[in-house]
Length: 119
Image (cartoon, rainbow, N blue to C red; front, top):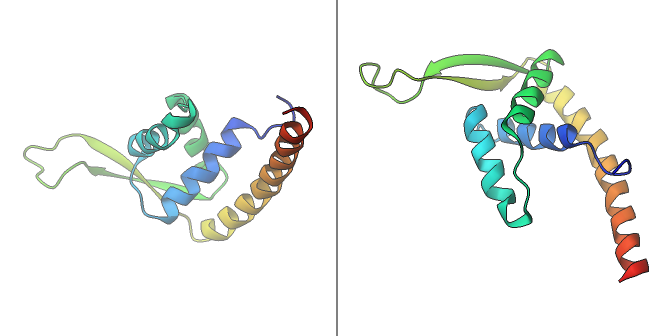
């Protein structure tokens, strides 16, 4: 719906919050979001998670580092990409979240009016 928030903006807010909480890497973020929204029938597509992370990197909010998953380099060969704030990324993230909050508040108003008017 045109009056609803864009899926990518919605996902980016969650990804920013996860980085603020030092929560992991892309695939873990995807799994956490899928678990958290399962009860609502929403499963964010993997492609959207990675596109959103890529955009946050392009916007200068995040940067990537790579490390081996696990603590034993003899056994743990899987490399993961971790996301961190750039030097001014936290400020940019706060501004972005503030803008999205305005959109979310507008959407909530529209949805609450629709429920009140029709049910």
